[in-house]
Length: 305
Image (cartoon, rainbow, N blue to C red; front, side, top):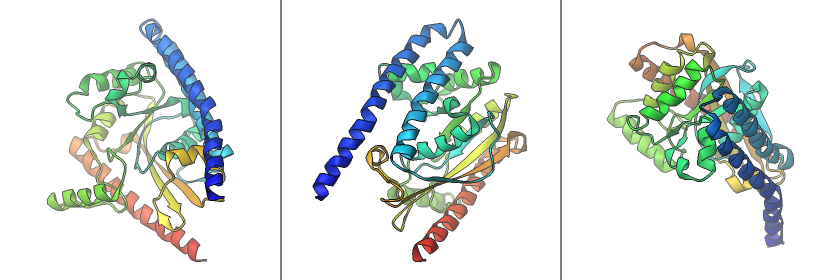
């Protein structure tokens, strides 16, 4: 019976996902066809690509929340509608994107989300071209190599006033126990404070982004999103990508909890100097870790009642 149930879940996932994947392919082709128009009408291409992206992301969000029953709880600051911002978040799993998109939908910025993505993706036919058309920053994590790409993305946001949420996972990689131990060793070597439940943040990309985008009059704030999961008593255990696409009742039946806390910082309140910005981000991560520990204890108490 268990095998039959698993098979039904997989078939259900295929039925839900295949139409979306086919639509994603069509969307990537459409985005690729927009590329020749970028030099002629950059605003038209950006706005059109944003509408296409919104439809793609809204569809997969609906699979997760409506069809598979994920309940995303949200706390913290209320974000203004249609506001451009620099966004930082911790990175746990694929499901992080759903929690960020839940906030973006609330703020009317779903189609304006732009993530830092791996540079290798630009070589993937259609997908890479689509990301390029969308002004998605494609980086190698080597900031000297990435300078040309970042200058292009930042200049378009600043000079053309493209509305955007420019989103980065400041730890640079997903959290794992092995990486946490490596982060602990790094912090001990440099006499730094290790945030709870998080990896030590990489500051160079954050500094570069803030120092460029604070020149854009329409970029009003830095948002911090803290992402938390719980599964049957296990804190920060998130579902796999396939579970988010296939499992019915992912919250009420499977017992997954999803929470994201938003904090908004007016960009003019951030320090002006690079080294002070680095310290600001490091302290932010300490605060995030303290909040995550509070959330872990709260969920643990709920499980005992």
